[in-house]
Amino acid sequence: MSETATANPPPSATPTETPTAPSAPATPTNGKAGAKPKSPVFWFVIALVLAVVLYFGLSYFFYATTHESTDDAFIAGHVVSIAPRVDGQVVAVHVLDNEFVHSNDLLVEIDPADYATTLAQKNASADSEQSSYKAALAAYVLMGQKVKTAEATAQSSQADVAAAEATATKAQADFARAQTLIKDQTISAQEFDQAKAAVDKAEADLNSARQTAASDESKVNEAGAQKDAAWAEAGSVLAQFKQAGTAVDSANLNLSYTKIFAPSDGLVTRKQVEVGDYLQTGQQIMSLVPKEVWVSANFKESQLQKMQKGQPVEVAIDALGGRKFRAHVDSIQAGSGAQFSLLPPENATGNFVKVVQRVPVKIIFDEPLPADHTIGPGLSVTPSVEISSFHLPVLVLVAAAVVLAIVIVLLLRLILNRKNGAK
Image (cartoon, rainbow, N blue to C red; front, top):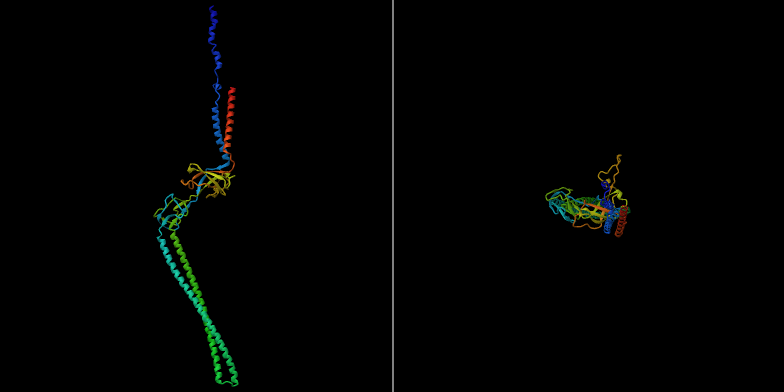
């Protein structure tokens, strides 16, 4: 009885082990299998985030395909170097560093004493030459009067010669008749002698008149030669007078150069002059930077395929915190920047390595730059050239981003549901 009781335990012991057996399959082996499905709010947030990301991604994609930009770009502008045109000591400086000046504003004054003295000397020399010229001109006029007097005397002498010739002709005719009459003894010997004496006298008077006419004619030639000499002398003195006038103009110009004026509007930069300095001609003392500036952008040669003159540009200026300004492409340089450098590259050595070249592009602003900021040459900018006119409206981009976000969220939910169903 006792062995039977030991081998066969009482049935009351079995219920203590039975409750643990069915409870094992009820406990999940994987914690995710029993996870609750995500709420609609979660998927809405996911879709909204995706839509925003897709919107900016699509915007950047379309912007990158229609624009070319570079950070190798700088503000450029005219820089006017100011230098004296005469030597001298500075007696006054009327500008300060970085001061804005207008055209024709007085910048620097050089001591004018030496140049004023030189001008006075040149004026005196010019006055002397002017007096000499007036005297020579008066002499020329006087010689002209002498020529006219000599010509009148010569004409009178020619008239006397003509009268003497007429008298001599009449006397010869009377003498010829007297010779005929003396043969016929019609006249007396005394009358014949008178006729002969008249002929001799007429011939003598004619010879005298001819000599006088020749002398007066030579006087005309002499007076003409003197007139020509006076004219040449007046011309020489006139040339000296003009030269003296030119010297006066030069001295007056040098005196005016002692005051240095601004050639244009601009900001004073690199001022290197003070009162008391002795300046040499051509010595740079300051520079003027006008307000008119532009952008010199060095684009890669591979970016120039669709770039053309007149295309719109957005220029972000670093000095203004990346503020953008409207501009346009003005011109593209005919050659790379390296080709026009001081030492252009020489690729005929046999060890050629291809390097992407940079080409300067000039960009002009379409809107004025802020007056309260100084925008000068050398400042960094980032231009973005619109090489294509293709645009998508903002609403289209928003709709596309929303649709893509919804599609992605639906696909994610479908994938997650299938994974949960499989488990």
